[in-house]
Image (cartoon, rainbow, N blue to C red; front, side, top):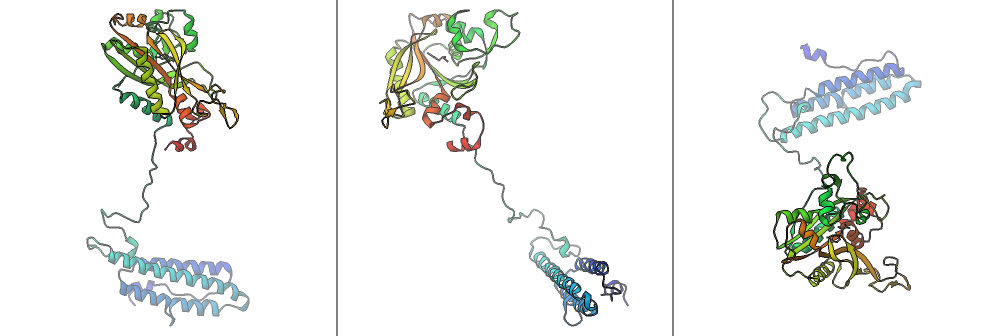
Length: 390
Ligand code: DAH
């Protein structure tokens, strides 16, 4: 007998029908099946392999039936029967799988294998793309609502011919206060809740560092490097020593504006801001300029917007409008005509040029535009909140 034939598996007679003996016999049979299944190079060999295992006429499964099931004593029949059924299913599946991988091998394009290839070594040909693999899903990102609002505000002014300037968040006392006409120890500084950088006492007061409390210092930095005429907007992050709550955040954002030219008047300021508010909130809103104070503008004003929730009426559905506290107006931003003292700090001749400036909180505008009820939502990174601005 040829050697390999001698090593082929044959179904043994069982000496006992205990679970342990049966288990071992099944294990040996399945090992043999697996080993044989790896040696099938083509369809013809597979047919022989299939018949050897599954032929009704004395195939190995038929032998299992005869030698294991029929030979089993009565009391073991049920258990052996279940086991043999299970075994049959496993053998059928395995034999079918071998055929399936052979036909995959036959239909795979590419070089002819140099060595004899069996189904066990089926691989897609080199460089082939497996188009059945699921793709990589990359969800779309989106602009954060604060950045989105910032871009909207900036683009309103860009359309009016303004350019964009930026400046540092860690600022000196000189730019944040002194050159903006806040003298040392002036009470107007108290309104700014400043976060100072520690251990600066050895420096002259004007060089001490702080986190900028507004974007106004970039007015000074820009006027130092550019001569009039000037029309700029300054978007950026600012810091205040405020405890966080629904309307306050120690970090927030502003857009500042500055226009300097010959004959800039308060009417220009009013017309520009009225146009900007209509562009941001819709053409039906009205603006009102209310006297105020900022050290770097004279005169100064707060701009109020007719309440977008009650249409400026002060009442909504017969009740007091909670958004404007029944006044019909919402305070939105600060502005004014550039104080001549400020021009003095940057060597602009205040007898020849005049200018206006304004500053607005971006979160405040986003809150009104989108009906957000808590400023903290902007900073918590909750996707359920952010997705609403897609
Ligand atoms: N910087 C001011 C603040 O943060 C806002 C402001 C008011 C800016 C009037 C201006 C202005 O440019 O003219 O409180």
